[in-house]
Length: 430
Ligand code: IMP
Image (cartoon, rainbow, N blue to C red; front, side, top):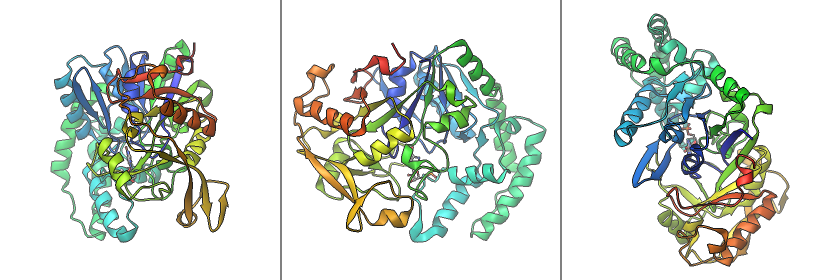
């Protein structure tokens, strides 16, 4: 199994960054395939904390090539800041390649994100304000500016002028101020000059790598239930974080994706608005938030916390055709007391046999939970299955049985070492 997708199996923030960092040194290529700097991945290693929004966490491995693929939304300013910051922390990074098909995020996208959220009033989505939705709108509307054009010194000024004129009219319609062309062109031309050397045909590079049988790791961002098609629409992001997004976003066909692993927390969190049947708006929710430092890497917003939703997780296993689960943040549940897990949804007096399709359907949904024994021991020092308390082992076994998906890796702390690989055969194969 040479190609592996690491996907967020819940609503994002499942600690994918740490997992990609752990597995990245075994890969030749690490590829981000969707989303942009709405994502936030924290990696703690060698006494340093790295925060990534656009760069794949694999950039920390000097022997791996990091790719920002065509499905992405790339803010040039943020990319360059991140590169400079990361290089200052660690001078030897892996090489970087950016797809000419990736779309570029401009200040008018951020401004439109703000104006559109304000216009939604009580129905706001709770976006990260990074301009991601408006940028993907441009992509679908077929007026977006892609990396290939952005770094073309002849084409970029022409495209920017025509798009900005249109965007300025839109922003004014929504009560915003127009953005001046000349200063924007000057600022972004300088970014384009720095990014140009990284832009190359990543589709061909990856297809060739797959043909040679090299290890390619596709790093998912956000999570399954934020997927534009498969998430809790309209409270979703505007891209495809599910495993299928790896094909669309990179140009690698489905038969060349050999494996998919889903990262899930031992509980559930989400940021922004939208359905969350197991949410704990009480002291236990606050305890999980405090123990897990559940505040957004990108926006600093407190994350909504709740019990593990196994109904949603099982759905995610199917949707992403997961061969295994990577269960993170088990350590956060130490001392929480007995633990509940959601094993069924009820709506309008009866069981619900599927995940709701619409917000109206979600509104009546109640989580039916089952109580499992908790543990009070600090498990961060565990390095093998046998080091874990029986209650933690039982909790993991329950997840496996309910979802029908084996646990491949457990994460019991933020550091690289705080990881237990239970099934190496489920990662790259034996
Ligand atoms: P957007 O992606 O900024 O448009 O935000 C849409 C929704 O997705 C909001 O609820 C955000 O909080 C959520 N979201 C976007 N990116 C992430 C992420 O990386 N982790 C968790 N939630 C996210």
